Image (cartoon, rainbow, N blue to C red; front, side, top):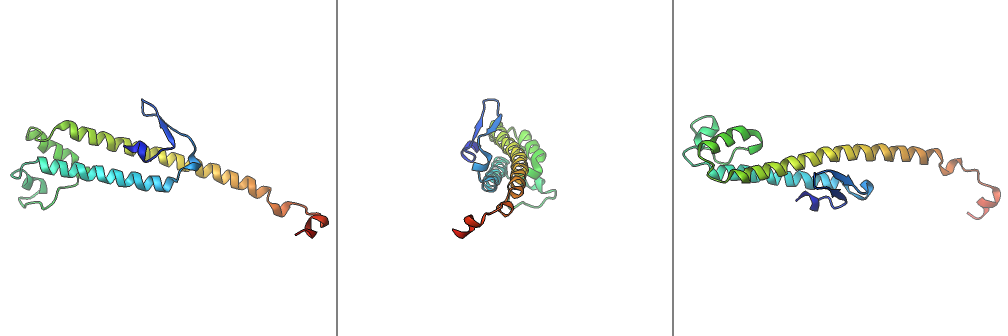
Length: 150
């Protein structure tokens, strides 16, 4: 899924990412898309867990005996939700949860990689700006003949 968000990179079979041209990628836009996709996966996990937990087990998730109106965030209650699902015999296949968690882990790793790429691009571009500034046109010695044409 994430390869469609970041088309200027090559991902090997062992999930090594090689950025082809970092300046050719809108890193802010990619980060926003990545965050949105991670939010979708987290929400899907929450909804999947909620729909799989029998209604008679739901009140115990709130910490009190009150009925919960909406699913607790899977991100914050992973251990609790997986425990209840295991006690219920995994009403929805455990493999579905594992696959979504693996995609989230991959997305989180891409975010870490993105952070490193942004840092490197910033470092490289600031070095390039310094090089350009040190050889700016203001340092150029114009001849009188060259100025007459301006």
